[in-house]
Image 1: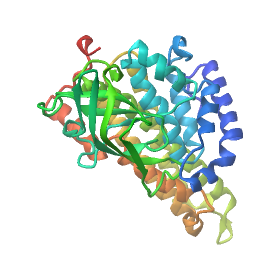
Image 2: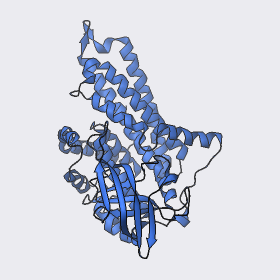
Image 3: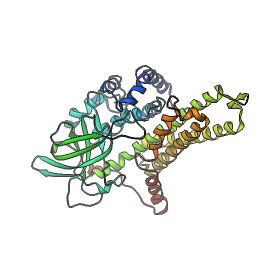
Length: 393
């Protein structure tokens, strides 16, 4: 279906990006899945091609383009069929670069943002802790100011690019007396600072992504590495959760499209009881149902991306998109694998990986239960969420 949402320029970028992925990524995916990590060289290639700076200003090496280029970026990554690759290669611009671009001082932008856009260094965002997942207000990692440094102690877990990244944007409690949302700040911590250590975690899926547990043991971080205003970190995190959840929604419906496409190909090729599988009504109707739901979620997400670019703070709607898209992707992966029969369960066929990777959608970036609670609070209790204001900048 051709949707008049993208211009000719957008579609030219899509084709160029698709060609790049097919040439420089797809042939290596199986090896990267076995390696359980990506080589640094692919980050450099993405940077050289300008893919890490799509919406970053030209002043810092980016292209200053609109959000639709990021949508295309996320959609095409899903078709590579490696949730781990898509997670690691997109976490760098979506999570690390976004915070540097939006909250970084001129000094931090020169030191970290510019080389991040070029792919010379890779960053990660460290929020989740062993004792608290989606509960950002329960952050325990402490950063106590002593002179011109913060002394950081604590740990983070389930961090994408948590082992191989060059710098970490860590959420820390800079006011030890505060509770809840108050007193949280964002610090940029260099990987080679004394007291920083990490170990890789083994996962059910997303095999090409290095997911790590990070420990901070009396790490001295210069005060100048503070992002934005001290104690305003919670507002920055909440604000950027909107873009993260929209990105996860895009990746999820695109992954569902990929699964459906592969399944339709299989139904056209495979025969049973003397006829093609595509001619069995029960399978045809399942395909029709899934395709309809994918299209609805896609168009809904497109509309939200427009609102987000226009400056609307769409907390509820982004949560809805993430909830529906990830649930749909999980269900489509399961149903499509079923249509492959025994072959669907084989690693040599694509659906096994799709199924494993899809499962994380309802957990990462806020669980489905958290999405439902956010939506319920806003609908039932009339709760509002405050966007970072001028005083936080």
